[in-house]
Image (cartoon, rainbow, N blue to C red; front, side, top):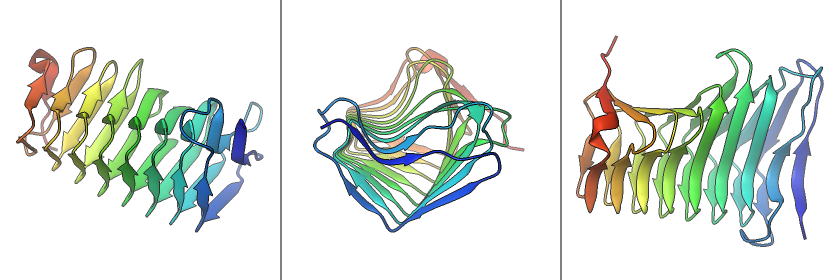
Length: 212
């Protein structure tokens, strides 16, 4: 069956906390299924959602957040496993909104985290392992990775469009470590990108930014 395990609405300024959930879907190939679905539309905005200590598995999209309005998603100590896409993200508004993820694992998804526009997603102290693609941007997507590991994926970090910036990250043991064929990878020059079948594909689009 299609549908959402959890649907989130809300009014401006609301705070929603999802803690300790175990959401199991009907299988990643059942189209239109979402573990957590955001349904926030203008004039409502500025809803803050926390997902804590939760596991979301076997959905088309584990977390589906495609919003033209400003809101915030904060994810910690959680697992996105065996989904077609672990998190599918687009969030409007100023950069004080968007997504922050810490101490979270993306395991065995076709795509662990996809960001395709709007505000950036900041990921820290997290792991993408055993996915088709660990971290992906396309369109105008933006992801910042800090102290994060991508290993045993088909491709660890891929910018099909948009920008991914990485600092203090380990990208090892993937089919392709970093791919920047359609977008840009920004690196602070302090990452470990080794022991992949192909360490860097599309290196012309890999640029170094200055620490400050």
